[in-house]
Image (cartoon, each protein chain N blue to C red):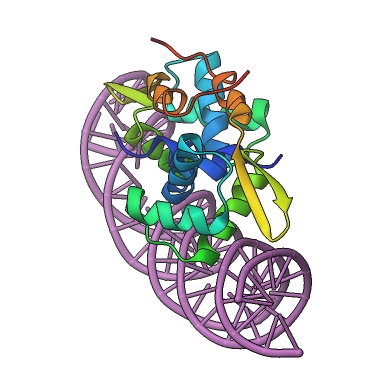
Length: 90
Length: 90
DNA sequence: CTGTCAGGCAAGCTTCTACTTGCCTATTGT
DNA sequence: ACAATAGGCAAGTAGAAGCTTGCCTGACAG
């Protein structure tokens, strides 16, 4: 479980998390299509794939393989490392 | 109020937030000394100053000037943009 | 007034990061 | 079997980020 903070630093990766929160279990191609149409993000398939690697290394995305499909699920629990670190004032 | 996520991406900046949480209202030189002794971070004065600029742009640090001193105070409220964005599972 | 201390500004350098490009593997449908 | 689909690997590139270096400004003490 690598650097959660670094994973959140990129706007495209945050859009991916947004998209996975709205609909979990998407494939790479599904994500690419929806990022363009719903989030105005125009990234190539390889770029999104590399972003997913970073998110997975940070523990924010879990994957499961079925045949030729690879589904991506959101896992927000690593975000606790942020909220637990600093006392957040109202 | 710029990019909170980008501000958190750097380990030295996170150490600065840690240090300011432990003792708020520190000056630049104070921070440099305590970062070295308590956090094992060896950054030059200019480096720390630039980090503080980023943190201030993100709204995580507020400053007040008194004479030749400039005090830095922690403000964690921008962290809500993170916790409010994604539903955090237990 | 002069020296010292706290901080600021800006150019240059180096490393990292995001992205592209090109090709490859594996699974599924016809 | 063959083509199409879903995804992976790796080298190369452009730009951003972090840091250094050198000099400058402003405040206070003697």
